[in-house]
Amino acid sequence: MAAKRGITLYHSPASRAFTAYWMLEEIGVPFDVKTVDIKKGEQKAPAYLALNPAGKVPTLTDGDVVVSENPAIAIYLADRYSYGTLAPKIEDADRGAYLKWMVYATAVVDPVAYLHEQAIDLPGFGPGFGTFDDMVGVLSASLKGRKWLLGNRFSAADVVLGGTISQLMYRKVLPKDPVLAGYNTRLTLREAYHRAADATWPAHLFPQVG
Ligand SMILES: N[C@@H](CCC(=O)N[C@@H](CS)C(=O)NCC(=O)O)C(=O)O
Image (cartoon, rainbow, N blue to C red; front, side, top):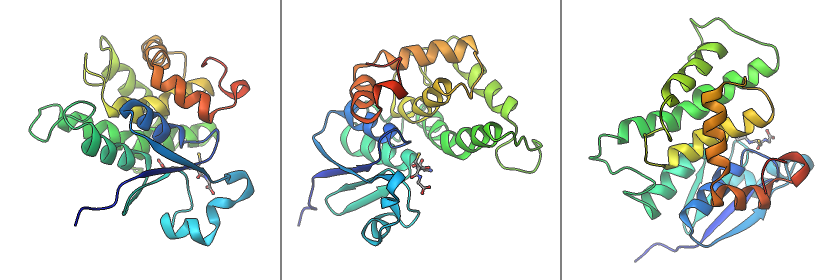
């Protein structure tokens, strides 16, 4: 029997759930949105914890499928609904870099940037994610001379890592690196980015969009 379908995104305004929302807009599939207001603690309600025991947004359900963590949501959606377009196919040589950038976004960029914002800069040797300056250097060198992470081809990795970079640039956590700034501008010019930002970020919080 075929699995039930029908996508619901659990999100909270002005949060990392922007990335999953943007991913859905890029794919163009219909989806329902349920707001889990993290300012009111709704992410810790038992019904939500049953979907995502980490008590974080976003979470996505698609029929019987439940998936959380932005990179996992994007990989799932791209493979299921945009295979060969937003997701390089398994046999495509770009698939390795694609997966690497997906993981790098939340295994390295997000935690390193958060610690840096809190004025905690750990030594590079020891933590699995290295230093803030190393991370910025990796991003800048990898994007130099490239339109997107995979070259001329926009992929779901640009949504995940790009969404992270974009939020960090707006909050001025990342430095004014011309390569990163140019990449961020290209991201913000995408119609799907606008739709997601309009739907999830109050205009005064994300003023360069919309
Ligand atoms: N690693 C997660 C991070 C998600 C996350 O940190 N979400 C925050 C909102 S920006 C959250 O739900 N915070 C509520 C809490 O910590 O209680 C992902 O990539 O999806």
